[in-house]
Image (cartoon, rainbow, N blue to C red):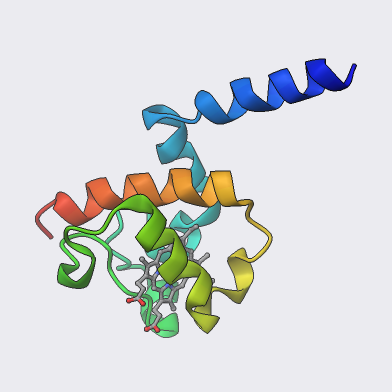
Length: 102
Ligand code: HEC
């Protein structure tokens, strides 16, 4: 039983690829940063959310660095419940957004 559970966990983590990273971003980040990372909703402006599209500071960063940045920013108290694998997945999507022209 335990082996099965571990097997399922490994399968779940390794299936967290491209599509899933968009889904993870939508589930945990889009409410503030916007679906397209522009953070141009009224709420986002009120919260002073950083637009992720074309955000220079993040250019060249890999997903683990972005995830660490998210964890270390007190403005992200709302995402502390997000598991590491899920956050890493969302961060991979952020890398795509950063590469887009704002
Ligand atoms: C409750 C709203 C909220 C949610 C949800 C949220 N963020 Fe943010 N995020 C912010 C705000 C506000 C800032 C600007 C922080 C600042 O200026 O210090 C920010 C900044 C960032 C930055 C830039 C960090 C920096 O230090 O410059 C990154 C990267 C980021 N968010 C990624 C994410 C990711 C990935 C998720 C989903 C896992 C997420 N955020 C979810 C509100 C949110």
